[in-house]
Length: 449
Image (cartoon, rainbow, N blue to C red; front, side, top):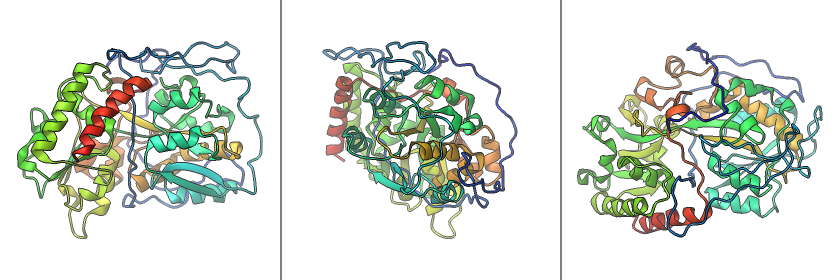
């Protein structure tokens, strides 16, 4: 989306290519800052989670209900409440904080005698980050995983779980806040927020970061093995066409994610990622059926292994999975065989995941300290080395990642820059009726794959 989001002032970012190659000394027990240990390795194995996203559109499908204003309440700054719609860059959301759900008090000690519970995708956090948090704060961490967002949101909505921290994408924030599932943040526990890109200190989906802190950023594109595919897919007039090229029948996989795959079809045709028009969805339905007929793609969440293993030498991928793919190449295989393309024109995507504190958790102080820990520059860099997904940290630059060996030169395009979030397209939240129409099209496609 080319329009700058309102009410956000862009600050100058550091231009240094330097990336820390050492860790800070451990913080004292109970200190809010994280305490990384040891130099991160850029060759650590991990897998990426599958995401089921929603979106927000500007037009409406016939018969769909209008967007409903969000719940209102008192703001901690005394400005009063205002209705909030599903956020988008042109209409940023300042979410209310209700009197019956205030932020915790400042200067509290972390809870003891029970683990901090994180609800997360499998292999989407560095185990070393959990260990260093225990060493520095004195609180053990327990991770419970899920396989898709729909199941995760259903679990959280039940109100019967005591997870402390959840890692959603921003298209879920409206549902989580309207449902009263998130605890507002006390910023005094999270000074490391200054380490992240300025836009994430006042994001459109959560102005004043009242409920969220950023976790990772990524883009979406196409990856392939140049030793198995002689064509340079990225120089095609429309690289997305490769998914309909019958020469690659049964050699292609797509992300098992309805927003990613359907969004790719929309971008192929120059349409918006968040359409709500019936004619656009009919086009997506037709072209997905044509894709199945021509290439028989596999919908998978394991492209980070399938690509390096040669099972599918062409894959739709998130940038973080491509970074991870080099860790799964057979011994002796040159990582330079991996290639990645994402649009550099107005079809470019930019997305991010975040960390939030759940209201039903029993460790709100420790949860705040953990968010601060993950925003520590060294912890964030080590986490990137482990999971392949880049944190939006000021000190990280694409050139620095290549120079320090975190990215090979052939995967430099997998790095994400702050400017992408001013010009890139976003996958936004749909109202529930429109989302059902999207999922109907997706279910038809999945039945055939």
